Length: 189
Image 1 (tube, rainbow, N blue to C red):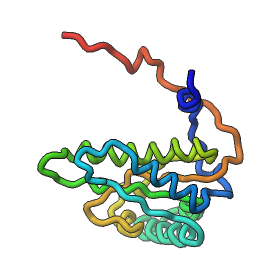
Image 2 (cartoon, rainbow, N blue to C red):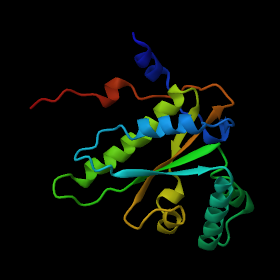
Image 3 (cartoon, helix red, strand yellow):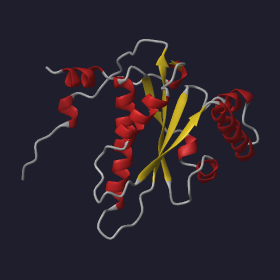
Image 4 (tube, one colour):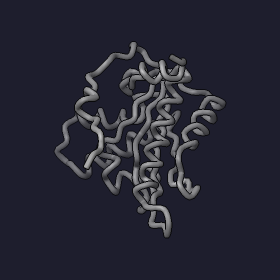
C-alpha cells in the first residue's frame, strides 16, 4: 500500500479544544490554502472563499458572537456564554470556508456547494498531512444569518464550516465508522 492510502486510512479529526500552538506559519498557511483551492470546480467558478481568524482577531470574533448569542437568548447561562467567547480561540487558526454558490446558466448550485465542501475537506486533509491536527465544524453560527454577517459573509453566502487547525495535544483516537455493508450497494434493475 502506498503512503497516501495509509495516511488516509489513519486520518482522524482532533477536537478543536485539543489544538494548541504552534499553528501554521505563513508559508504553511499559503500551502494549505492553495491545496484547499485545488478541488473539483465545474465551470472554474471558485464558488468558495476563505476567511482567516488568527491572532487577536479570534478573541474579537468570539466576543462578537457571544454578544450576538446573548442578544438572541437573554437567559443564556454563563457557561454557554463563556464557551461562545472561546469559539475562535479553541485553536491557533480558524479558517471559515465560505460557499459562494449562486444560480448559474450551466453549473447547478448543488455542484458549487459540493465544491465548497471539497475545499473544506482538502484543507483538513492537507493540515493533517502537514502534521497539524484539524477539525471541521459548523455549530449555530453557520446557520444564523446575523452571525454569518458578523463573521464577514455576504447575504447570499453560506458558511460551509469552520476548520480549526493547530498542533494536537492528544493522540488521535478512533471512532465508530459505518460498516461498508450498511452503506454500499450495487445498482440493478
